Amino acid sequence: MSTTPSAFSRLNRALFWTRTVMVWERILPVLVPFPLLALLVAVAGQWGLFLIVPLWAHAAILAAGLLAAICAAVRSALRFRQPSFTEVNTRLAIDNDLKPEQLLGLRHAKEQPSLRIGKAKAGIAAADPFALVMVVLGFLILGPTSFARMPASFCPFGAQGSADLNLAMK
Image 1 (cartoon, rainbow, N blue to C red):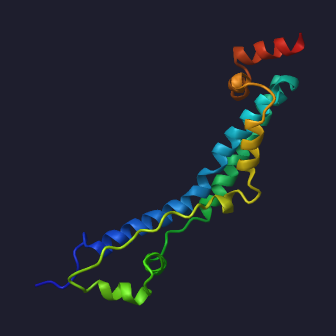
Image 2: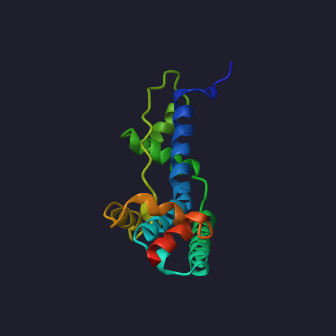
């Protein structure tokens, strides 16, 4: 008769989902630069920046933004590390108002209580310390024109972008 707990025991499932939540929290800062770039381009297009710059400058702005987003994502990805068992155990214990030693003791209990999995704590603050996402969303919502100009912002050499430019020149 084996005394090791099942891989599907309540404790092991709770540890698995807590680890998954912690990994998601640590991956989130890698993903934040790309939606931020899209929002910045949309705001710049809505406010008419791309109507006054030449096409090569528009393309250069997009390329520089993409390069900056990739650099920020790679920098965050290089800092990523898997949560250790101690970190996962401590997090699960805190989420359930227990001591980590009590969770370790539960591994050998035949009857394990249901354990709560804590919600993910947004790691956006680490990736966006100046809250640029909120500032950009504010400019997007309070923009001077409709959202019709935004598609041309993402494609500097498209037909729609030159049509907007011709309208601006008139």
